[in-house]
Amino acid sequence: MMVELPFIPHAGDNLMLGDSQALWQVVKVTYIIHDEFHPKRDFVDLVVEVVLSED
Image (cartoon, rainbow, N blue to C red; front, side):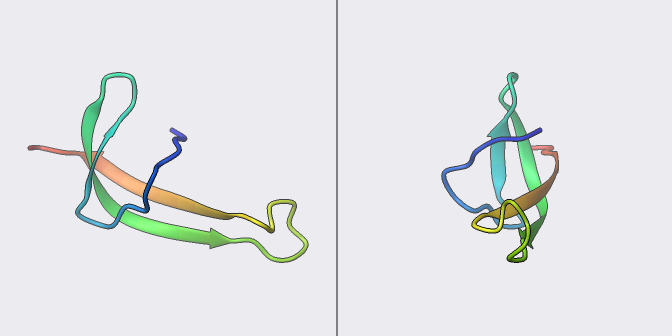
């Protein structure tokens, strides 16, 4: 799922995502920094691994 977030989440944070507004817990955050030859060189991608929260 791709979403735009108004903040950078950290491991342990909870997010409400998707059409069902389910509560997800952030497990891992990975930054992808592109080199100068990449078409997206002016951007940093953020990959957020989540699991369905049990709260």
